[in-house]
Length: 239
Picture 1 (cartoon, one colour):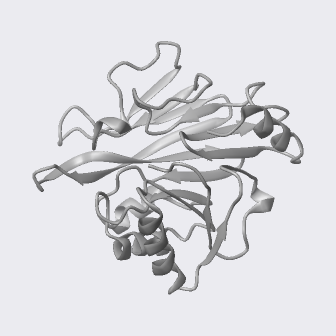
Picture 2 (cartoon, helix red, strand yellow; picture 1 turned 30 degrees about the horizontal axis):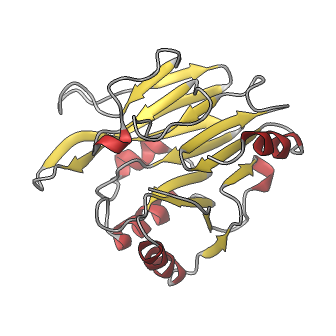
Picture 3 (cartoon, one colour; picture 1 turned 180 degrees about the horizontal axis):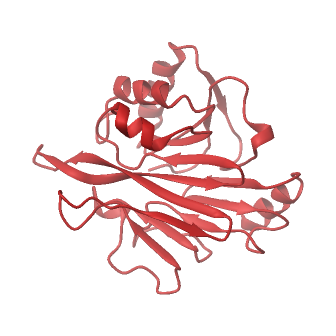
């Protein structure tokens, strides 16, 4: 997740509200004067195996496999948002306001281990935070239809799984990114340098700028978004 003190220091240099994104564990936070002093901390794919060093205010989960959820979240967490509902006919629907952050979801389907479709087994979570809309695609297994795109709305930054097999294939994920039109794209859920490189090559063919960061987190604001689509690769474990 990176060193929290350094994230605070970097956030303090920004003017106005900012968001901090870490790739491992996947973590999103607001920061005004200091992270944790009026900011909101969010952990995505919250699970029993890898947890943030600080207690989140909000956690989101999907249940494609056990490293993306837990049945025993810390009782100190204010909002626990599961990306699946009680049945395929009752998808999860979240629209939570916590301080200056809004979190909502758009249900999607997943494949079961047997290859069948599980309706509404995944959610794309959208964080309206620091005047930004940040989307976490979760364990996305298919391209998005127009209704889902309409529900998602305008996106400034997106955290996208790029394994190319366990989730959606690389060409399909590239199509999703083209549909979302987010200025900033951050890859996650890759299991090797090889799978990451394959995805970078796929997007490179589509004239998307690629930046390899030296640090495992990024501080963004409305004014620091790239002018043209950029894929920002944060180092560290990203599955």
